Length: 560
Image (cartoon, rainbow, N blue to C red; front, side):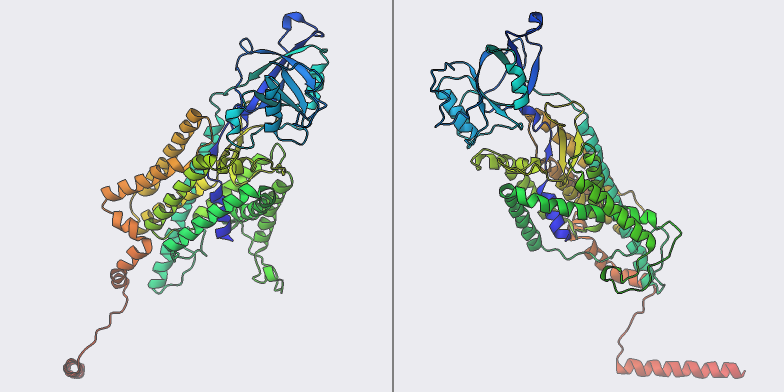
């Protein structure tokens, strides 16, 4: 279960901002029925357009004025009769119906008849895309979409309507990215710190057991059930995991409408477990130790505490509320709460055994992020980035209207044309670097307990710097960024530099468990473990004589 959830999480390792907003535009209109001639271009509606076909001006004063031709009863396909009635559409914008043919076909037919652009009238707003990347080279007219109700209002201006199409352009700095950055840094810091705290508790229990004392509560341990054993993870297992991640992402791209519901269910389960794991240490402080009576119910045979049952039900209720109301305006808040708890629990629970495994995993996912964001647009027929399309709602033609929930979402401060727009940061960009941060903190507390956790603090700062670089690249390039491209070098590079400066690079690479095993004989001596010595027969005999003499002297002295 944990592995399945982890590679679903890694699939969504991307930071996106301004995704749908780049396609927003306004249509300004004027006709014979305009009430106030002095405010000729003041009325407008929202439209969406594809800038890859033809760009638009960002200023009303410089925008081109087009005559609008109403052919909205016809889809404007190859076999339609829209252009066969001696209708002059040269250098005009043609309004056509949604219909069954592709946007590329509609645009090519209109372009062949000399039109300057098409306005697709649809009951639902659509983002007109191309069938394949080469279509953007052969079609050079405006391709836009408008809602039916808005188009009807425009046509009330009379038979002769003029329009201006104006792109909204970039919105500038939006402080929601700061909120997402704080969420991400807080998540890796809390998860990494908790992982080190758990290791400290495990070390105290191990010391008590080695000293022959009962391993009771250590006072500061909220994780008494966690094991001190380091997982045995091989490079082969990491490579298999990486191949599963790639496969699942491709399956999501092609079968998004079906697999997205599997991901939603997994998120609800993982969010419930994570929220319970984060709140359960607080719940332990409630002085109520009553347990469920003996029973034969499979999930309740262990007689859990009533307080744990109540907490579990409440956590499940939060996840169920999100699952039912996931498209509501407030749903992003609940999603971020569940996501935060889930990521913290993953970082606290999952333990990478050594830096070698960390490096292999992070380097593979580093190239994974680059390939699926920057390379796949040159491979897919539509020119889409596989990662971006999966993170924002599936490949072209997706009809589910669902979105992958394995992301932090924060709405923009400004309002877009249609609906609220969000900044997104995938959980993979938190969990993957966070596993290294957790390992570093465990290394800090287990190698030397009385020192500043330099590896932990440094890599948390490096993670924050990597996020800042991602944010800058996001706004300079104006498109979704593979955050691991910047986070992996920052966190891994910092770890290696500090390890080399402190002379601990080999210890980091070998791992905590091997380093602990190397020091085991000395620890046994210090804790009073028995030392067995093998003696020869002669030595035993001489020892026996000596012992006997000692015993005789002891008896003589006693008699005296």
